[in-house]
Image (tube, rainbow, N blue to C red; front, side):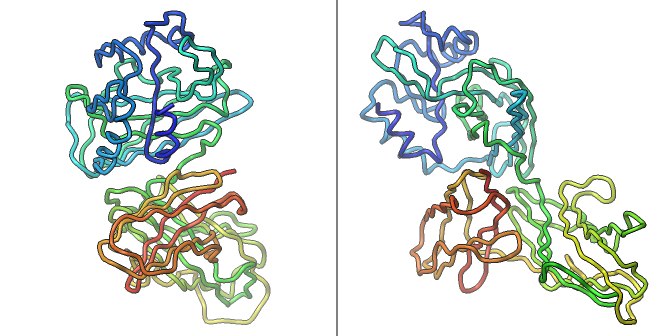
Length: 427
């Protein structure tokens, strides 16, 4: 089928929802499962025959399947004013699903009559249809929003989060079921952006701003009066500017939580900006008790509203006397930190991902490019590109089937600067 081939060729950037109308097959089980939203959608479009393809709501491709690929090619280069990411949590035992949707507004959208749709589609369903089709994919199952969608107001340079919770019907095969989301301007019918995620691969997405720390040595065993060092990382995971606090706490053996050791107020981050601070030195005072510690960094709004944290353990042993008389670190996100930014836009999709993700970027000029993958310890684990590339759009696939689940970073660099992005491998 032409539509199946379109999906296969454009899987990363083509969200498909197949709404099964009642006519000419009123006994179609997919239609009868949830007719109200189906009829609402059909009435909205004036759809009175099958098949019929609408691209982004405003391109009526009708039923001429030979023109569908050309129509899609015309629409794909159009930049969206929204970035959308679906994340969440799937509980296999109870079939409970928590859906988290984040929307970053990077362009202009209509402030009125804009609606958000979130729902469920299922693939690989066997049913002998009158047209001879036996297997059905991307079949609409249900909406988590109202039939007409939920009204939303989206303002440029802002980020928004929406949450939904439901129990997955036992009729659905979880491994074949996806969550979809899209934003549509009702009067014009234009769909600004869409997103999707497999239910069984749902996991909490990256926070708006994330903090990480990579120790220079592992394990860390330091004498009283000594010190250790690490690299601090602060990343804005959205396309809009953020301002956050960063503070460091300590879990002291026999005492409990102590701190903050250091605090940085109102750290500004541009969209997708990534700050690194290599060689941050943490002194250990001579009076520090021996034992096992946890070193903890938080980001958010100090002191009670942390949106992300990172930690690592270290051990203090009996050691030399020292002039170190406190825990205060060197500046982390002040003079010691630096912003690394290559003048290109890059993204990874899907993210989180299972085994394979595509990294896309656009070069304004011909450049010597290196694209590498790093683990959470800062070790380079793969090099995907190390060559001179022409200006324009590029796409590189990282097959991580041989790597373990966890957080990774890709680093896209040229001779002058570099860009980091956080990606999550989930198996």
